[in-house]
Length: 483
Image (cartoon, rainbow, N blue to C red; front, top):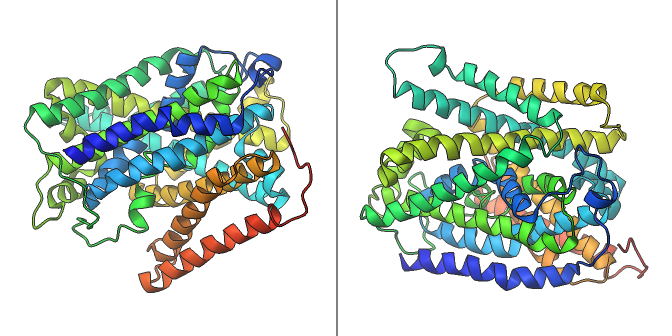
């Protein structure tokens, strides 16, 4: 338990220390933000800082720090280190960087920001890549809650009915997505999300308290892999636990709140703070996965078995029940159903905005918004019919690849503005190694051996770093795109 408590304290201290250092690197000032300067009553709307924090937390969290952290716990408490250090030095820097850049550039989406700092080719890649990722995320965050709703109702009533049908609830979720994606951001998102954000935090606190009060023991950190299937920690665990440490999906969400911040000085609390809060939530769920289930021969056999038998939704239900009893069922329904849905709708909303930025579409027009929104949701409905586990794996790799590109974009932004670019360049290099190694190793990708995948990933990361240095530090200095 000592390891868990230390990691928890490091996350909290990291917000007040390294988070402040990161804020000073960007240098927020008193200039007008897009929310004040543009304010269109649709996507650019000034909202209170506390509300922005909770909405950002809901936007970036969803199923990620719960499902991903539980899956990561199959490797044992080694996952605590990745969640803690990844959050402070990677994920929070990533989220703050994209959010701040977006505020400095009229609330532009990550694809347009990438084009400004990494060139037109990367802009086109990111446009396509981010839209595909967002539709996959929206789909994952629709299928998961729909399955859990059907599961929970099925355990309360006898026999099959429309209320226990996953497809029925999937249709309900997609209809909600359409409404939330279409209307002004402060109507549904601005009013409901803070409530669900509080529920997500309460659920994590309930699980953490339940671990101690029910006599469970959180094992101490060991670098040894405890995965029953022998799956290596590197790089699979670093991709499996994405939203609880660092996630490219967040790069698509931060611009949503960048369009609603009243001042630049809110960025530290809204972006860095929400990521640290998500890291804490992920740490708690990873600890629950390690503590609640039996270990056999030093392996996480109990967690591995229930994840295979009942899936991620069933495992969440089981953890809530074992740590909180009857109250856990209610919190599971609110936290693991409503919260993922609230990330899913902002995924489709962000996809709409990426396309709008791409083709310079006027979002004030109902017809234009409808013409963009309907095809996106139709694509999500079609993807939802694919194997959920396969979609999740492709989402996980795509997620970390987008994070890699976003970090390189941030690094170039910092260099162009004569800031400490290594703050982003170091995690960008690390994530390059993670992404390339996983692409080489994973069965759904190239399926190569570790003997080949490991050196290829390291070499590729060094090449990316060399390209960055050649285009920045070693290139002829100019004023760049100072903002």
